[in-house]
Length: 157
Image (cartoon, rainbow, N blue to C red):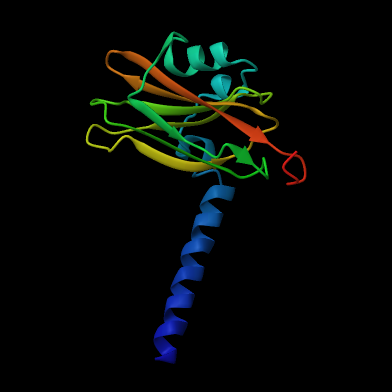
């Protein structure tokens, strides 16, 4: 039993060591291996620019088909739970925006063809503002918003 654990540790150590040597020798470039991301959209300072950079348009249509679940009052703006879901077919992506943040685009989830359009995460909010969910469908951009009140110091005020 002890020999198998020792053997596994040695194999793992050798594998990690070989990977480290390959990276340091320039055989593996981390930038080439990592997925690309819409940097301009995540650095945008307003909602319209973020959506245009991310989805190609900022024209959203408010829809009851998009359901956003978030607390009415968040005692800690650093960890605000948010859930977005829809029954709409053919959803390509779901984006979450906090209108009161300096960089409003919080998250963007690209969905596969057979994926269920449901995401849940925790976001960081700088101040009381709307949390906006934008769902990209073949017919356009659908959205829903919910105001979340962020309290200072968890005092409820």
